[in-house]
Every structure is written in C-alpha cells, then in structure tokens.
Length: 289
Ligand code: GLN
Image (tube, rainbow, N blue to C red; front, top):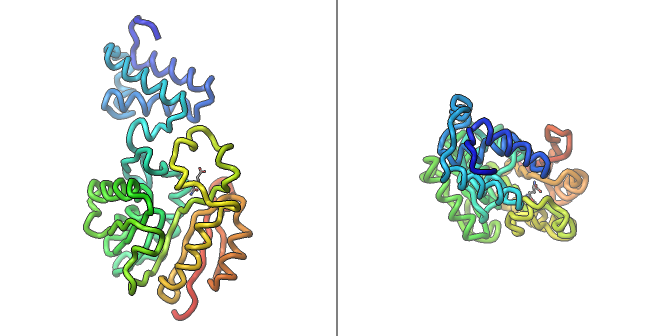
C-alpha cells in the first residue's frame, strides 16, 4: 500500500486479494473483520461507509494486522474475540480459538439440560469457557463447573464469565481434570473439548493452529490420552443416566465406541459434523434412570 488515498472499499479489495494469494482462509471475511477491528465499527457499517478514506494512523494499524495475519496469527488473536454460539468470547494466545464444530457439542449437550429445572454440568478442558458459558447462558437454571489445568485459560474463562453475565452460576476451577472438583459433586452432564490431536500430527497442522496452545491440542500418541482419563473419571462423577459428551477427531469414531463401551458406558454413539465426519462421542453412565 502506498500513500495514495485508500478508501474502505479499496483497502478491502486489495487486502482480500492479497490474503487470497497467500491462502489465508476466508480472505474477504478476514479482511473485513480486521478492518472492523481497526476502525472500531461493525461489518454492516463498513458497507455503508465504503467510500470513507482511511487516515494514515488507521492504515498503519491495519497494515500491521495484515502482516501478523500473514505470519500465521489467528484472526481471533488479533481482534481479541471470537463469536461462538451467538456470543462474543474474549480470546488470546492462552486459549484455543473456539471452533464452529464445537457449537455442535453445545447443541447436543443442551438436549439433556432441562430449561425449567435445576441441573449440574461439568465442562473439562474449558479453555475460553465457550462450552461451559454457552450451557449456563442457554440454561439459566443450570449450575456449571468449568475446569482447566492452565492458569491462563482459567483467567480467560473467568473474564468471559463476568463479561457475559454468568459469573454467578459458573465456577471456574484450576486443576487436572476431576482433581479440583469437590468430592461429592455429581453431574447430569460432563462435556469436554479435550486435546485430541496425535502428537505426531502437531507439526503438520496449519500454521494458525500451531500458534494455539499445544496443551490444548496434544492428545498423546493416539490423540486419546486425555479423553481416556476423562471417560474413566466421569463414570464416578456422573449421576446414573448422566451423559458424557466429547468432541473428537474425525478419525477417532471407532476407537471412541470401543473405549466408551469398555469403560462401561451404555448407549454409546458417535455423531458426525456438517462435513459428515465423526465429531462427537457420547456415552450414558450406567444405573437408573
Ligand atoms: N479441532 C481442533 C483443530 O483444529 C483440535 C481441537 C482439540 O484438540 N480439541 O485441530
């Protein structure tokens, strides 16, 4: 970009084209989101203001973001937020960026939390808190516990809980899976988007994903190290008939059916995502009801 006059229209067109050549995902959308951030406006407003010229300082700020995006910084880390299940979650490099696939986990989990009666849910590996907080906000009578082993993630989850007005009903606990959960607590639902990428596949991930915390991605040699511990531990924490709902990798469907069945769950099943790939695994804790 030179010193000529750059309008919103022109700058978006140039950036989208540049992102496209550099194989940035969703080039136009990314250009718009970053410009919205710099101009502190909305995407709709960008379109009503296409002929607005950018000031020098705005252009410089936008240029800096473009450079970072091209270097592989995820868009959400640059803007500091990501939309998830209709709400805005603050995110930074301490947490995984919420993915649209994970909204399917929320949708499935909501089916077992009643609208008009109290219930208790536990979300492990909560990260930004996107799953735990979506559950709490969609089900105002539910009490939700959110656990993460990363102090940074817990700080982000707590800030999101406050910002979204769920602070009172979501308890964020720092620790290893079930360790910080009070002894006698029993849940109707345990959810987790645990790390499930195979260690050997981490290096081959997109450069954007490699900017995210390895702790949130690395699931050990077969990707199931953390998930196995969750499946074993949740049996003692779920009420009889309670549901374990997990996000999984698209090649882990069969392994999950075996794992959950052997662990002692009933009604074990795997759900596919919009690309028809395995994405969720479910098991019901034995016993009545
Ligand atoms: N879906 C993530 C990815 O993009 C993995 C998240 C996880 O390990 N829980 O690779």
